[in-house]
Image (tube, rainbow, N blue to C red; front, side, top):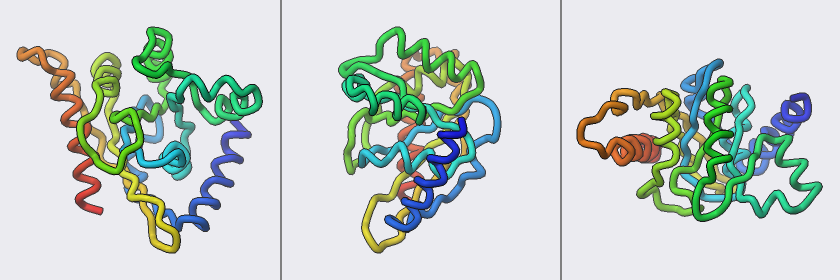
Length: 191
């Protein structure tokens, strides 16, 4: 944990100097208990930008190919990454996420699954984890990485999706995903 804390300080400094990053709404992320952060995904820097302003360790899914390089694997594991295979989430990944949430950890998921400048449809994984675990979702919006401009990461109010657990229509995952994506879009519109 000491390595993570030291790395967070270095990353905060890098983002503040290099991108004039400003964090808003950090108070929306609970200080204890399980949390799912759901953010837009525009750059390889996004995991750093989402995690650095927070005083809690944030866990991330990372494509399994990144874990093939031994030294890099050790680094990203220490920084909170765990592998996920492309094309679908394995049972092992599902167990990992649910176990982390059960332990009261913070897990960040990029619901769109890939980098894009457009906040559009999301995949159902984050909604599924939130509904299975009863964990609130904090939407996050990253404004961008323009040099010499003020860039922002904005954390919105937590979204409680438990009201959808017993949805009679049967499309609760679609509705929950829509709520999550709308939360991210709202932050983008307000920024």
